[in-house]
Image 1 (cartoon, rainbow, N blue to C red):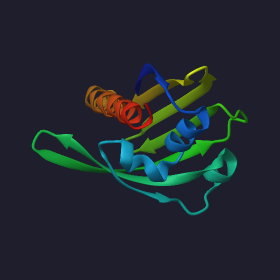
Image 2: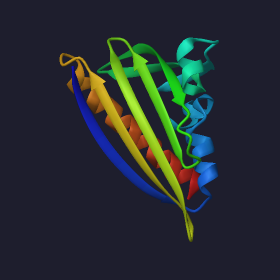
Image 3: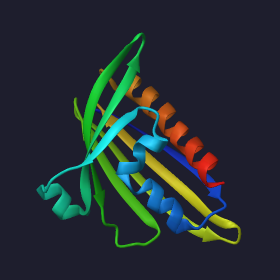
Image 4: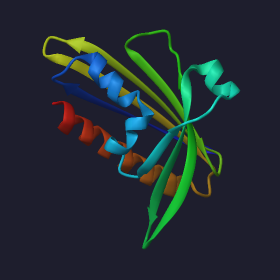
Length: 149
């Protein structure tokens, strides 16, 4: 297994609650994330109960040359106990984990968002997974900036 971390920041001309409401609702991910085709609320499960924020099943198609690989993963939202912080963990085959934390704080002109992503994957698929995920997450941030600025 190997991991890669990236950090992004952006300013928005809207309130912090609006940013957190959008990025914190997995059902709205298809509006922002270029690979996601559908999201459903997962029913029950110990992980969702322990996290306190809910669990979701996400369907995406990952481009691989002329092919699109189907991928299904689970996202669990963890209750951080902080109004300005959102923590999500996604897991999928083959043992890929995407750990995401958003911190969004008010500013005089709106808010400032800090986004940390740590992705862990088996070494054999890691370069491909890292490349696809980094590009997709950059497109999420661009979509947020277009929508909220």
